[in-house]
Image (tube, rainbow, N blue to C red; front, side):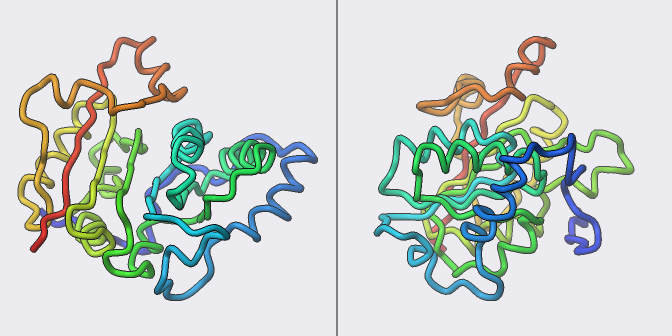
Length: 230
């Protein structure tokens, strides 16, 4: 497999949808700069947050933020980094986080593949990649986020024993991801029976993307892998 990341080809689609409302524009102008990760190397991830945190987790492509917000609420002792280049999704997420006064969050509004090398090695406890764009056409597949290169970036950023979760309703992308996990020297796939990867994660909240998949008759898979100790 030749999955080397091309820095000139982003793994996301649109950056902006409908025109933002005044309140949303204010959030992008005021809250986003305050919560956006700093440029350059980030040596201490826990120091990013205003309150002490026990661990730091990353969610890539959080969409409207339904899952990320739920995890933030249930685990205030955990610091979260949310990545979402789509400005409308970012604005929707910031509106809820600001309204509820959630402080255990920092965000990034660009390509996660360019962020990962800047994070402290072993600084993440978990990475979630939930319903990423499948780029289904053969000529588009180089834009899929999961590759040998990005799995290596995940492995560098995760602590030993750290968790990687991948969920999708596109069987081809599930197979694509699993085939790369199985040959990765850095990860162990933990699911043992079909029921393991067909069962949503504990405390799972159905996102609007998953609701659409269910309406259209697609079945989701929920893969889990752990970072090897060595």
